[in-house]
Image 1 (cartoon, rainbow, N blue to C red):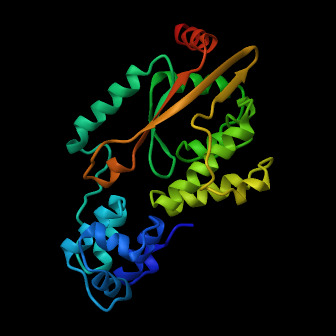
Image 2 (cartoon, helix red, strand yellow; image 1 turned 180 degrees about the vertical axis):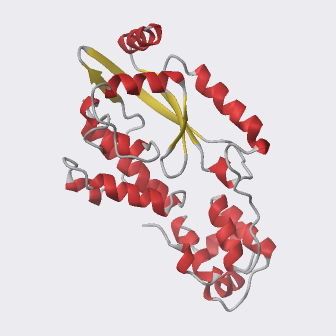
Image 3 (cartoon, rainbow, N blue to C red; image 1 turned 120 degrees about the vertical axis):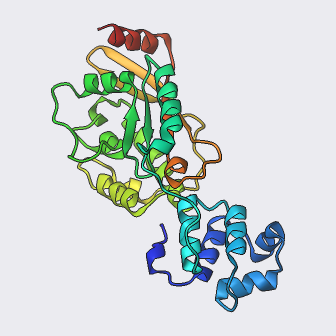
Length: 272
């Protein structure tokens, strides 16, 4: 469950929320931040007002995402610290070039860039080619930005082509829930998750998954169309030490073949 920070008027409850999300006691947080436990308690209850420096210090120790650090600052009466640039802004040109390089290097295997709402922002040629191959002849998923969750759960998405869909769906829901606990999701992502869990054929049991339950280190994704099967696993990469909200929320997902058959089929698609 995510916290709707727009309904919180004071920074104290927000600090307490993030301390709980990180499973830290007041004593542990006070020690990590080098402040007295009494002062921390006063901050959480509203008996004391934090300085801008204190807000940023506690946010750093609590590993609060940049967007939510701005919310903490606003709740404490200060201006935001971190910009939120459009991905096509001139100042992000070097980042866009880096993303394009990563995506190109993944050829002939799929790779994509998505934001915190699971919307797909960029893909390489292999991803466009592969998912068009799977989708051939079928109605597209719901209108709007291409979204990983909608693509995987919608009956007209890639779901009919995923032969181990129950395992993949469970892994995706757990991942989305863990991100919500960690504070890197948003209301739109939560609405999309609720939406896809209501799609026809989605087991009701997925709604009650425990996000803290340990999962397998790698969950294969097995696609098939006709007599061709593609067995992939994926890695997710984030940008290191970003100082921009948009950049921190980007995730680069690269698909890697699990066998020679998948490598051969991917290269065959590239040659067509």
